[in-house]
Every structure is written in structure tokens, then in C-alpha cells.
Length: 426
Image 1 (spheres, rainbow, N blue to C red):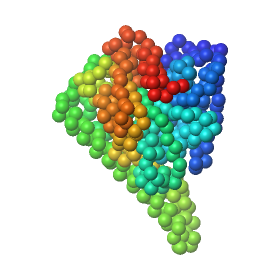
Image 2 (image 1 turned 60 degrees about the vertical axis):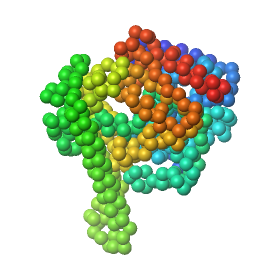
Image 3 (image 1 turned 90 degrees about the vertical axis):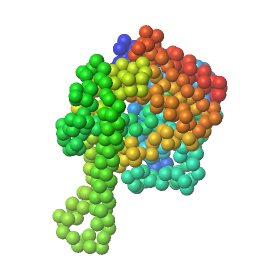
Image 4 (image 1 turned 45 degrees about the vertical axis):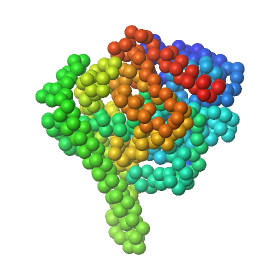
């Protein structure tokens, strides 16, 4: 069996390196109620058919070889990883469509595979996804989200959303939009110009407390207050741009339905047809600018200076790669807007009443200890637990002030497997 490279955790931080070749794997194509296709990877122990399955998913990341899978299988559980219809694509992502993919996965595991107990494992962006799903699934049809924030389908009241039995939030963020709002550069003054900047709001300006990493920066409480307010204001401005683009496309569709459309000039008809069909692609500049990255006195933890993307967020802020850099107006509102998206963990967790475990990494550079405490308090479960893993970064690799404690993954997985086994026997 090919061996993973020695540095695989740096190259592929979400994946496991190797797995016992006797572990069984079944790859299935799933079709949601709207006929969109996703792909599932069902991992099973070599010699037994478990009654409990752990269900992993992320809005866009490939979880088919998630690092937790070998541990689950060794502990006697099945593990099912779903790669959604938006694999490696958040530019057109509607979280409401993702819920239909989750429903297809649960139906497959219940009805075709016969699992008696399902535990949702929401790692990183999977946490807000599963929280949104379960909250909607436990809401009576008629009271669910009838349309994404930008309008249009799907109407979640029209679909069957089967439920699971337990929920693990693992280094889960408060929602993709909430994370982006915390890291959106407040100094941007022109959404069409990545370099147009307000120096009084620039966290990468030394006059405001910036120091070049790895030296930590220090920002005043007054600056942080202005900065956070400006971040929200920028999100609101981008929301308004997105809604304007959506309205323009809606106007074009309305024009096409008018009685006079067929008699209009060919030039006019072609323009309206194209405008109704083609969405504006929005470029969101400078999305690596959270003061917490550099000022370690903010939400103190074991973390080092930097973000999960780069030890130099001051430079990564201008890089082509980043969170939510390109999005359609509908995708921005549904997924990346911290003000408009419905996929907000704190908003949905009160409706999630199944046994819930909230686990954080003490050296996480993007999900902070306060985020995890908020999730625990917001949970509607009677049976709930909060735990932190020392010396671990967002991907549960050794990092931060307690990196000397060694590989956090065995410690993490003992916690997860013990908690699950106590409530849902394999």
C-alpha cells in the first residue's frame, strides 16, 4: 500500500495518512430531492457491521479521508463522509441546497444501510452546516426557511429532513459568514480596488499598533471597537451590492415576461436574456484581517501569531487565495454574509436538542475559545459537554504554547470515541 509522505499533515491537514487495508470502503453516489448529486464514502470495520455511524460533512472541503476516520473504525463505529454538490466550490454555494444533500445522506444511512444511530460530526465549517440542518429538520414544515436570503428556491418546507441522534462540534466556527466578518479588512473603501484603504482603520498600519509577524501586534480597545463596527458596515455594504445585482437580474426576468418583450428590438431582447441568465461575480478583496491573528491579548489562548491560512496574514490579505474571495450575489448572502446568512451556529444551536459535545483546539488561530463557549451556552441540549484540547491547532496538529505535548489527535479521538460510546454503542 502506498505510504503517505512524512509531511502529509502539512500538505493535507484534514486527511489521514494511511489506514488498515482491511478496512472496508463503499463509495456511493447520492441524489438529493432536487436531483443534485453528491458523493458519500462509507468506512466500515473489517469484521463487523456497526449499528452506529458517525456522519462527517463540510460545505466544500473533501472529507472523504478525514483524519478522524481511522480512529472511528478502530473503535468499532462506521464513518460516513459526504462530499457535497459544492465540493471545492464556494463561489455559487447556497447553504439551503446543502441541507438537501445532508438529508440524502441521512436517508441513505437509515434506509439503505440500516444504521440505528447517527452522530453528526461538524468539523470547522461542518459545525455551522449541521447546526443549520438539524435546526431546520426539527422545525415543523411551514415554519422552516422558505427561501435563501437572496430569494428563489429551495423552500425547505417542501422537503423531508430526517434527523440524527447526536452532534459533535469539532473546532467548529460560528458560521462561514461570521468567520469572514471577523477577518474582513475594515479598511477597504472601494470594493473594486484592492488597494484603496482608510489608514485610520488599517490593522496592518504600524500607527495603529501593527508589528511585522512573528512579533505580536497590540491594538487599543478604541481601535478594536472602531474596527469591528467598520467590519459590520462593510458587510452591510456588500450585502447591498449583492441585493442590487439580484434585483437587476429579477428586473430582466420580469421584462422577459412582459407582453411587449417579443416585439422589442433584438438588441434589447438579447441583453435582457443574458442579464437574466448570467449572475454578477463579486470579488471580495482582503479577507485576512482579523486583529486576533496578531494581537494575542485578544481572546487569549495558546495560539501563535498568524491565521490558519498563513503566518503572515498581512501578506495573505492580498493573495488570490482566501475565504470567500469570489461569490455570486446569492452565494454571498447565503454563505459568506455575517449579517444575512442563516447558517449561523449560535442562531441554530438552541433548536438542536440531541446530546451535544463541543470541542475546541486551544491553539486554534481562527476559531477562538470564546466561540466555543458561546456554542456550548447556546446549545439546546440537556446532555451537553464542553472540552478543549491542549497543544492543538485548528487541524488538531501539535501547535502553540503547548505543542510539546505531542500529537493531539490520539487525545482528541479518545475523547470523541469515549463520549460517543457512552451514548451510542457501536
